[in-house]
Every structure is written in structure tokens, then in C-alpha cells.
Image (cartoon, rainbow, N blue to C red; front, side):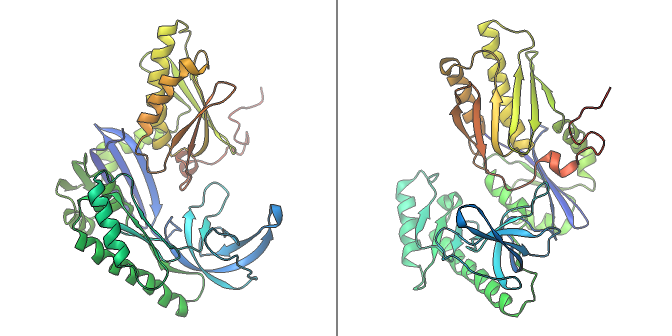
Length: 389
């Protein structure tokens, strides 16, 4: 179960970072440029190139003002296929941020998130979060939103936070989110591409909502933001001029990029990021007895879940645990891994056990990994980490 008791926000120029801690240990870290193409931002982009994809599909490279042109597919679920040419403008939203040498991924079906709802102007149905356990409240929310849908086609997602909200507040937010989208449309008619039409809210507030049940302290180095946080958070809010130094964030980040993590039992976890997938190996350190291996693998499962979230590992993650890879020995280990990943905002899930005995995990990719954020491939060894004798 993912819990956080402290959030640290530190801003320097246009760059800002968010660190989430639990009992003094770094558990999540995000860095973002307020002028960059962040996930959720909406732009008026200009198509720079039309490209042919496999299976007779088409895509476009789009200039949204980022350092690298972004990609948009002509085919998008729920929307008609577009047939555009170079130089044309299009309203798009960043679905995945740029990472490594790839630009951002864009979609045309804009979604506007709020505290209680997500507005989908191109949608057509109402979806209520399955995490709202009160069936009566869930149905009441669905009914209220449905009755207030405009005559135009539109869709809504009722978020988990709405479970404790007054229904009138939820309905008020419907009006607010519609207004935001209408403002996007107005800006798009007069803007010159590339242009930012809508910037998502500071990720700090989303993080506060996500961990509101366990969160105790928020540290910021921005007085203006300090007052905004106090208006939505009842716990401790403190101003610290240099929070990274006070909490040792840089040292914890340096450790989080090391390839090897030592476990309390004496074993080790090795993590290798490749272009195709993330490979994780659990080293038994000569512990071969069944009881020892079980303890090692359970410790490793807990640590691996922590590292997946901390390092923001994503895509295909292949884990080679110690000992036998038979299902009867790995079932409890996979259960532990699933429990530790429960509640991950990127939806990490244990897919199962491969025929080769490796545990497979899938996780959505929206942001670069820590390694991609803070390092580049060595020009001497080409990123292999090896040199000629």
C-alpha cells in the first residue's frame, strides 16, 4: 500500500521539483519545467511532417513549441480519422511527455481534470470511479452528473475525491470545467501556432489530493504557493528556503540511480534500463535454502515496488527473482509485489509469470525515468558502462 507523510516542493527559476517522503525516505520524485510540454497541457500545434506508419496508418509530427516535435496519430478512438497536410494547425493535448530521444505524444481528444471530475468534451458517457465504495453515493453522483449534461455531446469521469464532496460542489465544477474548455476554443481561434492554450494545475495539488489520507507535512520554498496550499490542506505547511539541503534529497536521488540495491537479508537487486524494457535481477548472494530464498524474494518484491515508483520505471518490466521460477513458489511473491504497487497513479500491474519463470510488470509511461532526467549515455563507452582493457 502506497502512503506518503511529507511532500517537498522546491522551485528554481522555471524548474520545480516534487519529492514525496515516507518516514524520511524518498519514495517519489518529479521534476518539471513550467514552460515545458507537460502531460495534460493543451496547445495549438502546427503540423511539420506527415508520416506513413505500418498497416497503412498515418501519423504527424507537430510543432508545439517544445525542443522536439511531438507525434500525433491520425487515428484516435472515438474520433474521425484526420487527413491533414504540413502547415495546418490542430488543437492537441500532451498524453505522454518527451523522454530520451522521443518527442511528446499528442491526442486530439482533450480532457480537462478537476478536483471531483474529468471533463471529456469528445466523450459520450458518464464513468464513476470504482474506488467509491459507497454504492448509494456513487449512484447519486452518476445521476446528478447525468441530469446536468448539456445538450451537446460530452463525457465525464467522476473521480474518487467526489465520494466525500457535496453534490452541489461537484455540479459547480461541471460549469467551471466547461468554462476552461470554452476558453481553450476561444484562444485557439486567435492564437498563432505553436501556442500554449491551457496549462494543467501545479502537480503539487494533485499529489496532495492523492495522499490526503496519510499526508502530514508540506514543505515549500515559495511564499505565494505556501498560502495557496494552506487554503486546501489542513496539516502542517512550512516554508524552507533550501528544502533539498535540509532533507538530503540530492543524496537520496544519487542513491536512487545506482544499479545495485542491497537488501537487509544480504541479497541484492540489480536494475538495468534498456530501450525495450527494464530488466531487474535478484541476486541470492549464495542463499540457496528454500526458507532463505523465500525471505529474499519477499524483501526484494517490496524493494522492487519502491524502486519502480521512485525511479519512475515504465513500460515492460521483467523481474528474475532468485531460485525456482515455478508458479507455486512465485505466487506469494507476486501477491506481495501487487500489494506494494496498489494505488500507483501510473497503474502498475503484475501481468504474471512467463514460461521462462520471470515475473512481468506493466506500467504506463508518461514521464522520463530518473536516469533519463539526470544523465546521458557516456560518449566513450556508448552507454554500455564497459571499457576496453
